[in-house]
Length: 325
Ligand code: UT7
Image 1 (cartoon, helix red, strand yellow):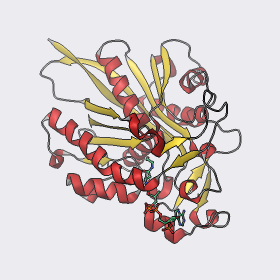
Image 2 (cartoon, protein in one colour):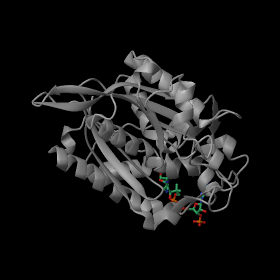
Image 3 (cartoon, helix red, strand yellow):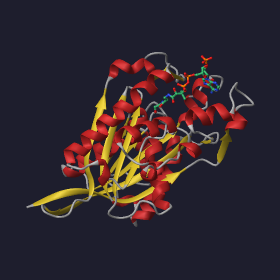
Image 4 (cartoon, protein in one colour):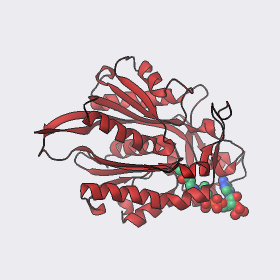
């Protein structure tokens, strides 16, 4: 008897060239480096250039992931892009990315779960691979979140940034008793009753405009740690693992205080937690794959490591996945 494992073949990332420091921001909005660092841990954010779109950032990250995997675009038959800032209302940014990669076979679609988009996309790709609907998936989190910001609203504009991360998952058929590898288990949740605590006040159907991010920061903060812990514990329980089995914890990078709070609640030491929010700010669906990319490139995540990813965002949506590298 055999089973299919969704194995990670490569990870890539991309950050736009332009960096905006807290000090630079504080020249145009009533804030300070001290407030932003103390409340969020953020020191700077990358912002896409004029005309640089989400699919462009996704393309850079995807090409790098393909290179790391030693694969060509033609080898991919499933593209899922987690994004809340698509180039256009339609078609899906995944379709535009597919075109930019020069391929036209397979299936490509977006997943809209805001900051949880990458975790939702990983779980979706894993299901496609395990049910033999695809062989190799390009899973992307990509955002030009700066385009959704009201740059006069200090309660939101200091928090976000742009970027993209990509991961290639491959279906590998192995004996039933083969050692565990790849995506082991995912846990996803949504509770739409919280929709108006974090949303965009525009959209094609509601206003025929794009709109800006609106957030009750304190309310989101209040729910974040509990929701994150719930899905992480669910994944651990389903796989029979303990937090002490984890080699790396890759949390969504929204706020250092939320990351610390979740780590404390779950009993995961700081040394096992990857933090990029100081340099990237909150890049929504791109935050987890960017943190993965950073930790692989600097040699922290190695083959055989057990890696927990998690995210929480608008909807509310939240989710976690456990991956054996
Ligand atoms: O991926 C999920 C997406 N979102 C999140 O995860 C965000 C979750 N929430 C948070 O991270 C935090 O709630 C924030 C960072 C947004 C805010 O931190 P806080 O400690 O909850 O501050 P607060 O909202 O309670 O505001 C404290 C004070 C307020 O002034 P008053 O009313 O006490 O006079 C704000 O007006 O800080 C003020 N304030 C600022 N001051 C300087 C709010 N934003 C700023 C700012 N600079 N940028």
